[in-house]
Amino acid sequence: MQDSALPEDSSRKFSLEKTLKLTKLRLLLMHFESKVGHIGGNLSCLDMLVVLYHRIITKDDQFILSKGHSAGALYATLWSLGRIEEQELSHFHRDNTRLSAHPPPTGIDDILFATGSLGHGLSLAAGLAMSKKLLNQSGRVYCLMSDGEWNEGSCWEALIFAKQQQLDNLTVLIDLNGLQGFGTTQEVADLSPLEEKFKCFGIDVVEVDGHDLNVLEKTLSKIQRLTFVVARTIKGKGVSFMENRVEWHYLPLSEEQYHRAVREIQSL
Ligand SMILES: [Mg+2]
Image (tube, rainbow, N blue to C red; front, side, top):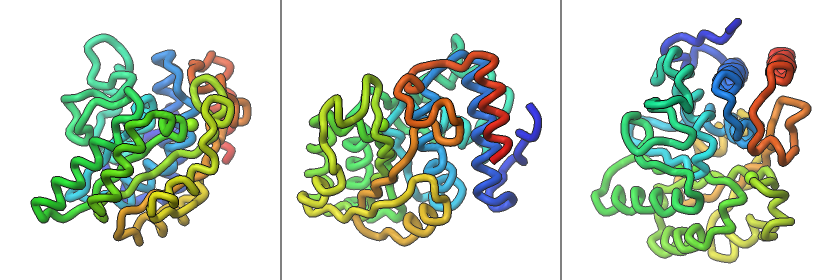
């Protein structure tokens, strides 16, 4: 693939914008070759993953991808850091691969738990944060969630726990793209405005444009308390025929669609 080869660790060698663009192109190729969907939700959260992994997360921090169906975005981001080999991406979603459609429970150091059965990631993250707190360990825990998974009651239980324990070492990011597998979040089970409901529990909430890399970096780098970052995003961001289209939750790319998507991302 043209112009896709990042150095082994591209952190700070390229701008975030260029890193994101190359990672997005590699993600599209990976999904096209494997004929795997979930591309729309990957493109809504990829900006956050690139900022987190290239600018925010340190060796003392831990990350949980609660919206596990965006595993492709996580693998592509780890590839951009040289933590997953180029050739391994071609095994995405194949038999005997480490790179399953949802994050695997073992085999990749950066992935601590299998996720993707939605609604469990925040409980795992809160547990990790509580452990750090009890053991007086440094570092933060980051949890990336979808908006649709707030339909799950377990998310609210974990929120209550995190607030009660005042887990100031926990940052929760919500990919608020307004869509989920079977419709808009308002059609399926309306919780809007989600940010106001979080505030009712006494949670510190920051609202950001989830595609503004500079704002994401500045916001995330300042957080020192238990904070929910509500990131307004666009499902399928950057590919015109995918943006805000619910069907791109599941659809794989045809060859014509793949080439069109690549042209659009390259022209950004
Ligand atoms: Mg969503």
